Length: 233
Image (tube, rainbow, N blue to C red; front, side, top):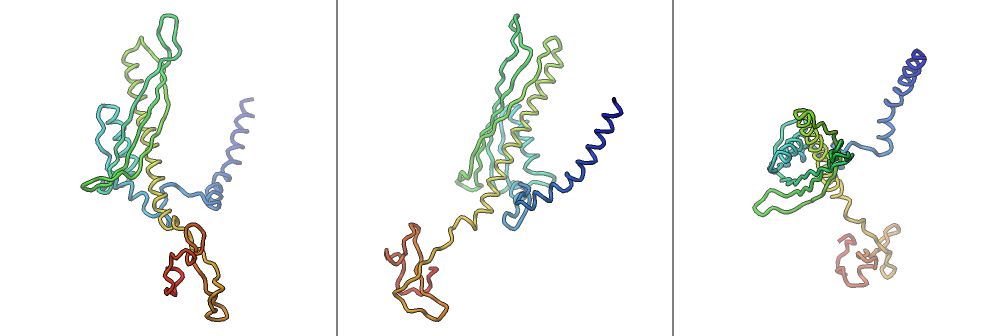
């Protein structure tokens, strides 16, 4: 029986390997791109992340969160935090579950939250974006082993700090990506209407009026200079 299971497991791995190799190609074909990928539409996302200065966070849990944020934002290269300031306020709440008859608990649930704000670096900093991320974790209590209990608590705080840092990093990266990619796409394409009151300039050129934001031809409301021959202005 064990031999059959081992053979089946090896067969499944061999069948899954080609699919895993083809999966990135399929995702790329359907428009999927990595969040930190530098493209023509959104160049320099990773470089902008390195320009974010992580402001100091008080208390031990705050320091752990800040160290995790610095690792996430800097990546593998050196940081140069001269463009933005990120202020993060993390918090950790513990809840006792699995309460026993002697009022002890066998499990602790931990909920971590972090609110972040991104500012410019200038004499009067401007708020660019803000958000919040949440995570949940837990640990088992070992009251009879105090040293182990302390190690478990430190490991729990480290996991939550890292998860919060990952969530904040992802949200800030998404904001950078949408700002970079949306700079050229936020402006709607102009809409033109044929102007039948004017003579055509040639067999292929028909005079047009540009529509305003409300969809009404701009000349009808006096928004355009009638002496301007360029309909795009």
